[in-house]
Length: 395
Image (cartoon, rainbow, N blue to C red; front, side):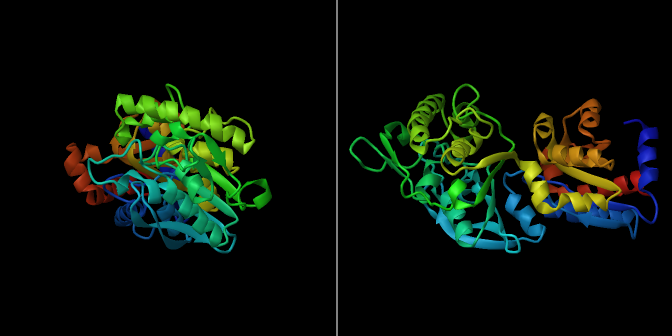
C-alpha cells in the first residue's frame, strides 16, 4: 500500500473515538491467539497511551478454536476421552449455557498433538474420542454444536466418532472392525440403529461442520492423498487408506439413506471425519472462520472498531483460502473498517494483501530474520511491531 493511503487510514482512526479491535489467530508454535492479543495491546498502549483496544481472539475451526471460544466468554469444560491411539486423555470443549451453544474441537481428542514426537499411526488412529466429546456436549444440553475439524492424527472417515455415538461397523463374521482407517476395508455391514438420536432432523441438534477444507473424501485431492503424508502415511499407506475409505463410503452411504456426500465440501476434512458427520449425523458444512466469527460475536465488536488488527503465524497462500485473517479482513472490508495484519512470516505480495482487504502487513521476520530466534522471541517482537502500527495508524 502506498504511504499516502496508509496515512489516510491513520487519519481516519486517529482521535478520541479511535478504537482498535484485535482479531488475530495464534502464531503456531510460539503464541496462542490470546497471547497475540495481549502482546499487540501492550505495544499499542506504549505507542498511543489511552487508546481503546478490544480483543477478540479468533480461530478457523482448527486447533485453538475452543480457546478462542473460552476467551469470548464460553465456559471451559473437561471430559475424559479416548485418544487417537486408544489411550485415555483429558480433552476440553466450550459451552455457552445461555443459548445452548457448544464449540467442540476434534483435535482436542484426536489431534496430532496427542502423538509422541515422530510417532504416527496412519492406519489405526481413531476418532473415537471426538465422538465422546460430541456426546459430552449433547449431555450438557447443547442445541447447537460447532464442530471444528482440523489438525487430526486420523484418517478413519469418522468411523471411530460414529462408533462412540452408537454405530456398529462389522466384518463378514459379524465382529466389530478394528480402529482406524485401514480396517475399514473389512467393513461388511453397518448398523446405525443405536446411533445417538439427538442428531439429525428428528433430534433437533444443529451440528455445524466448521472447516476450511473443501477436499473430497478420496481420490487425488482426497483426505489420504493430500493429508495422509503429514500423519505419517507412506505412499503404500495412502493407497490403502484411499481404497478403505472408498469402500467405507460404499457401505455407510446406503446404510444412512441420504445422498452421496463423498465429494461434498468438507467431506475430506480431518481424515474424512467430515464425511462421517455429513452422512450419518446430519451435519451442515460452513467455512470455519465464518461460523466462528458469528459465534464469537465479531459483528458487534466490528461495529465498535475504527481499525482492525488481524494475523497469524504465516501469511501465505493458505491464508487466502479460508484462514482466519482472510475471513476477518473480508468482514471488515464489507463494513468499511481498515485492516492491518501481523505475522511471523510474510509470503504474500502486496497485491494479494490488497485483494484480501489488508492495507498493510507487519512481519516479525523483518525485525528478526532467523526463524528460530523469531519464534523464540515472538512476544517481545510482536510488541515492537504493535508499537510501529500505533505510530503508523493511530499517532
